[in-house]
Image 1 (cartoon, rainbow, N blue to C red):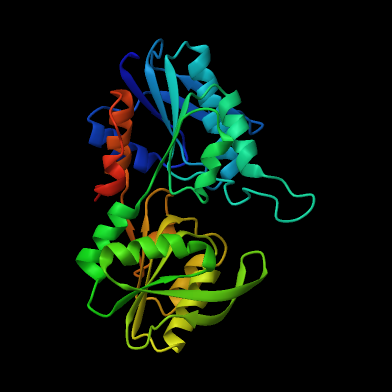
Image 2: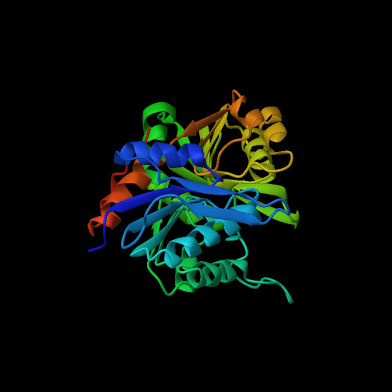
Length: 319
């Protein structure tokens, strides 16, 4: 058994870290996470961690390189300060999209991330909705991959579900995820067949399944530039759907994403707070944010007390 729990947060998503700490019922540990004048990351822990069970709450979201270095340097500081165990709590696991070689002379950045995290002395990783579950196999340490599905499922069931709802996968790769939602909700399933003409660009071809006269809910793990979902939503509406929504975990929202959502046919786009929204995205009437703080807080508490977290995959919680 490790010593008492200590929570630290980097700069990537301090609001979520604070909500997690409040859920657990303890303050965040005092730490200086800043920059030297030349831009190098500076970390100084103000809280004693000797023998403690340390949890570093830091998604590796934009600016991804800064967020990653903060996490690694905080972990190094903890290990050199004789922490008993260091767990990286990464609500969003950046660099996960390059998880295999799809062309000659390209990297597998998800494996590089795993190597860096382990080299920094991190003993365990807690993350959410990995882009590909197989990334867990890149690690030689325990990885707990939580799903936002219980939280998002509850939102759909209580606020969006109607008798004529159809769950839509925006591409072939997301069929398993969409099928799981459709089965739990007792809804129909449709798939968007598309061809990708370039990075972050998508051309929708046709809809597999019946969306005529139905409320369509597109399910995905992340929204980056929103091109895939916006094109998909338009295709679904052109196929006869009466309304369209999107439900996704990670709101990357880079480049023209917010503009595309604002100009899209979506009535509402539901995301979680694994990544903090920009000021402009926060002001969008089409974007609604759900908090994953209770899921992560319960997982952290269970890891600390060596309890099972399997119940979080089925029932879940959240705001």
